Length: 279
Image 1 (tube, rainbow, N blue to C red):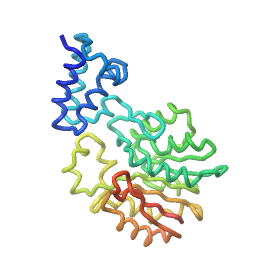
Image 2 (image 1 turned 90 degrees about the vertical axis):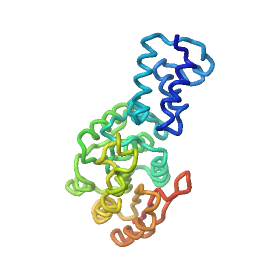
Image 3 (image 1 turned 60 degrees about the horizontal axis):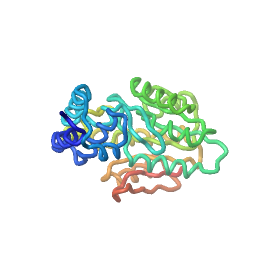
């Protein structure tokens, strides 16, 4: 007989080599399978799993032990104030990206209306959540990947928000349509090409959403070169970057965008994470 307690113990041991949160991962997966909360698992450790439940849980645990992220196994991930669908065609939203969203929402607070764009939208995390919190805003979401846009559209429908989705490269869809915006958000690929194969994130998450070129800033560089073509005067540009890219990204912003002001926001670990540019 497999009990909840014994299943969790075995799962934790199997997952531990690939995860620093093996206990949490094991609990989240079993809670999802049984449709209960984690507190229930801890309070009912002697309860038995059916053979079917034990087999299904074993499959999920093996996937996690092989390195597959929990979010892909469950098909969803929490972001800011809602849950979003995710799939291997999109990057899994990170808590650090919530800082970018908060900066955008603070900027438009009190505005009757505005136009915002999320470049490289992926799952639509920024675009959908911004639209949900600013229902009067015109929100555009751009991505080069049709598969990513399909997931983003699902998330917009799930949360009943209006977002215009555009397929294309960086700012080109906006430029081609003559669109002007007040807020530009972008979590572009920022991992250097040669570094990517050494990172666990490259095993499952889409390379298109990770590979930032030679120095990790190729896409940031290209976006900044065109940013004034789509941004209104006084617009805010927010770019997520790698922890060691703050100074380089600020220099690029000053060289290519000629801003009124530019600074770097740090994440919860005190690392450089968001470049904030005021045009």
